[in-house]
Length: 334
Length: 269
Image 1 (spheres, rainbow over the protein chains, first blue to last red):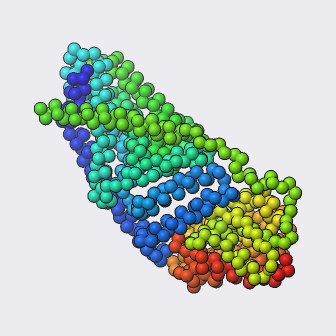
Image 2 (cartoon, each protein chain N blue to C red; image 1 turned 30 degrees about the vertical axis):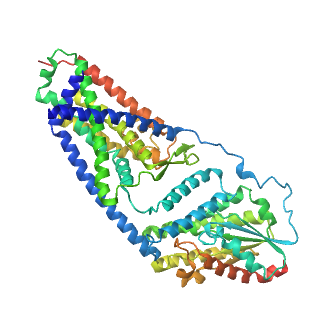
Image 3 (tube, helix red, strand yellow; image 1 turned 90 degrees about the vertical axis):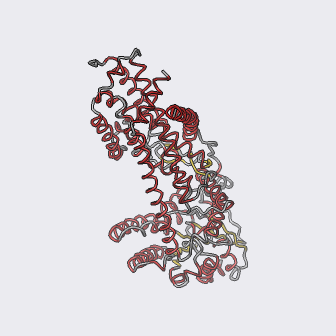
């Protein structure tokens, strides 16, 4: 079994497809980092123009003022207890910025790395995974090498399992490189720091409204870890589904096409999410798991982190089952 | 050999990565699903139940209640005083009575929020007791349309103005139901972005203030105090670092103006 996986991993590495994925990552992260840098500069210029002062130089004064205001607000007896926890969280963040002399307008490698994954989790990351997964079996079928694989004295399920585990390993490798590359490349633009800054999370949906009563700050590195873990989960789910399609459809091009169009269509379908209930059971609209962390999700009754994870898990398990059953039963002419 | 080492490094990354990611996944689920730490329900209800009889006011004091948004609250003042700090100082010249101030201003409050605040009846006792009520509202209603393009702005402005007017009417009704005698001082809007404002925006602001004034004057015991004229050429002097709220000098200038307007009434109280 171990040897089989080793064999599969080496096969994938020698196929250059992984290198291709990494190259795309390098290019895209560079473009994204440059763009962020550009936007940050423009925001600063606009602020300076609009308020007639250089907001960037005077950010400490501004932050001090905001801090005093927020503390006053916290003491006000007319405020709902509910609002107070989000206020406390913001005070904590601002205090941290002041204590560590971090201008909140400035980017950092930590912020960038997190944001990059938050932005890629629903489309870009799935596409990369599809590139890897979609030809794992169909590639062997179209080139005919599947026969050589199957005539060996190993049960079919073992062969398929080794392929699936290889995919899971490669997904980690892709995420690992996405992380390392964005830290290095954005580090060149914004500096490497920012891993200890507090980030707000813990938003909840109560009765169709965003509930901020349980909001708390976690250090940036923990937040980043959570984002990448969710990204891995998404990668495994999308990987499992494209794995199944690559078994059902013999041609690599067709299997990539099918799964890619499904994922892209998901972005349109999420538009109907609030009215058309059945759409929420599709895997494509549940890929934005990190939105539950950052509190930027559309408040839709019934759509929670646990719901989305359960739906995704259901799809993954079903795909794996179909894959194994089909692959074992399938006739392959030797 | 190279292949072997490559395989081992991939395997090492995968194993370490899997453990780290699994822990992160667990944390992410915990963080988004755990229950709120405290289901506090009785905390904000403190000042309603002390006295069952409305209006138990002391005849030797002038009670001032400040309602509305961040300007009412005093946001932006580097000395954290705002109207609650400066108005009593100016009022002192006209009355010998003790001045008691209650400030119920909330940052970011819109007119509909003020109405809800009043309808919740939490403030009823304070309102019933007060001789003077200072209201500042509307800035947050209009502020968010500034970034729209010209066409959308015009439409959105009309919608906002309508909503604002209807909630303002109800607000006055609510206030008068609880206290028919107090003097209501209503602050007009100013333009903190004086430097970067088109003629079109200036016109919208004037329309807004004009409509507000008409509504306010319909109530016999209310007065509309403009602020636009006072700040127009003094944005640099009276506006705080945040570019939106008055600063200490701004609040003092406004307080001075307000106290002059109600001088005679104060002496008679």
